[in-house]
Amino acid sequence: MRPEIRWSILGVIVISVVVLLTVPMMLRSSDDSTPTPTANPDDSSTSPTTHSEIAAPPGSRPDCPDIDLAGTSLECLGGHRQPVAQKHMVVVNLWAWWCAPCREEIPLLSSYADHHPEYTVVGVHVDSAGDAGADMLNDLGTSLASFQDGAQQLALKLGLPKVVPITLVFRDGHQVGMFPQVFHSEEELDKAIDSVLS
Image (cartoon, rainbow, N blue to C red; front, side, top):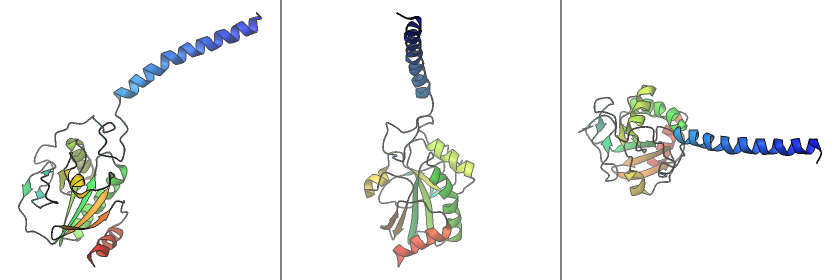
């Protein structure tokens, strides 16, 4: 056998051994890092697990209005439920800490709530890592009250699509609108809400 062929065969064997040794190490190190989340908060096989399942300590977030959300019993994310005067209109935004569009939309919702005191505007964090949700809200500097719904009671009760963000509109306790989309301005959100109220 010619020497060039022997060296070629030896080179293929060496490369194969290196690949066989390297791939398991790469897979092992990727298993140790944070999993890449999906836009399906219902899929526990891809749900991030780097944060605690327990919500943030009370007092680290604003209190939530004690309102009925389609008959579900949700805890306040980092605050307490406080009795409030019931408003006819409730705007609810479902979000998750790992959702980049949610991160962009939440300050807009907080501002919308400030400009529309006639509505109750709240968030619902639909991932089991409540502390990660509270941390995100704190990082954004938003005072938007949010509920914790790691079991996705609201989505299951209303038969919502398995995506975030979703904005819901309730009138006198009845759902009148659902927007599974990202809003980019208060005007865009206002127009969508007006469309289901008229």
